[in-house]
Image 1 (cartoon, rainbow, N blue to C red):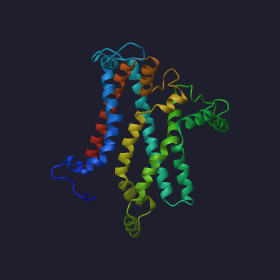
Image 2: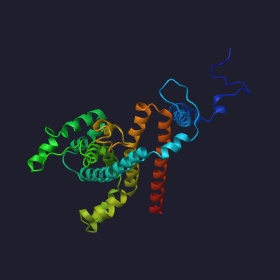
Image 3: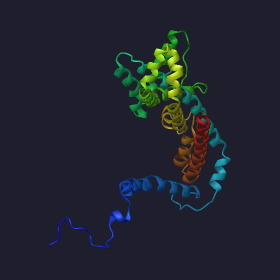
Image 4: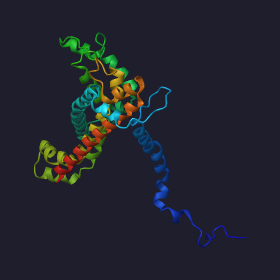
Length: 301
């Protein structure tokens, strides 16, 4: 009768010998990553080379025709312009306001937990709730925002139907909804700033503003760069709040490229062409990310 602790037979392969321990721990993640990330990417790339659609006919190979059509599609470039414009409008306030909120909380305001909850709580709301709330606020006749404007003698604004202000309304909604995440990142970075720097500055007679400009902001340079990159990537992928607030209107003046991709694929039934648009957009996002990374590295050097 063999002992339960007997060693394996000499020459018998074991799992530990075939696979390194680190790979064994990572194997479940790698399997899920390949199943839900790599395989859809490969499948989508193949679909972009076909005329696949939601109709019953079998897709046929068309090569790079979809990509050529996408590059010459004026509506796609218009939607991409809306996406870039939204990114430019939203990134600056989402970084600056989050930094200001974190500085206010970090200064030791009374009831800090209330401020932290108030600043971060909107980020926990689902996009459907946020959009419905702001649709009510934007109502031309009964909305709270127009009521406040009326108190100061400003006429009602058509927030969601005037092409000149609709994008700003979407940016305002996005700011209220998502600034809490950036606020949390900045607050964590502020709490990591060494106290002895402030103590030395206080001994030298530096005031609050001098400590802010000479210690706090330089210490936040790295996290500011990270937050900016993350925010740019998040803004480029905007879809949910735009679709729920305006459906890309009025007159497609706010339709981002992701919504155009959705319309082409699931309204126009052209899955192959929609896949090609998605990969063109993916390539542009990669270029933007690489440019940001190169600029940040150059600034650090």
